[in-house]
Image (cartoon, rainbow, N blue to C red; front, side, top):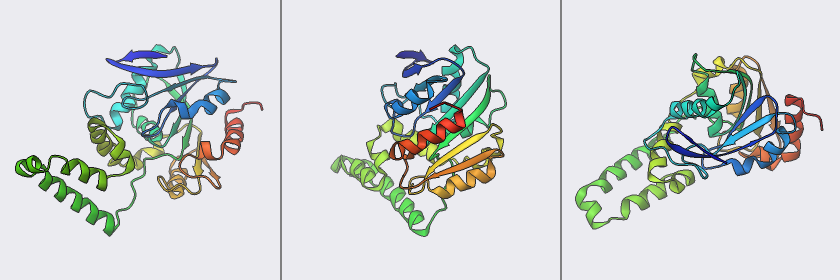
Length: 257
């Protein structure tokens, strides 16, 4: 299904009847990874999952967005739904959007439940190695951007970016790379106490992208939160331990097996 939101064509899926639950995917991902989750939750709820702008089959933003822009996008996307209450589930980057949403005191709906799966949002401490790498990258980018250097070696800057950046950065378009830089450099920890709804945190014990310590910190800072740790799972715990994840979801969402 597709619809236009603020001039952007958005791909989304809707299934089931009942109270509304919205699924927000991670960075570089799309709604196809939510197939099992949509099937499970639609037994009792109306499930809506969208490819957020810049991902999957949806259009890219027309300008460089930050997390607040994605929050506003979700709010605008949901205006067609006649509901005053919404449940939210976010994986990784999707969790960022949910956390930042709770910085707003003018939401047109009440958030009744939150599920954060291997969520991003906690800024990692900077090591000396990481600080040096960032300085080296900035210096290299400056030098390779000089007119004469760029003319002599037109592919050097792009190759340098791919070498120094993450896999997600290398795979992104020029626009989404700028978005990514804005997104990952925002610390959302101060907003965690604003989440008042019952919150389920699900984490892969072996997650290296958003480590388990992030989930433990979120459990302490969110007033009504509980953390479930999934053994033998990494950043995509909902796929890597699907059976156990489904059992946890059924319990929290009160879905009969």
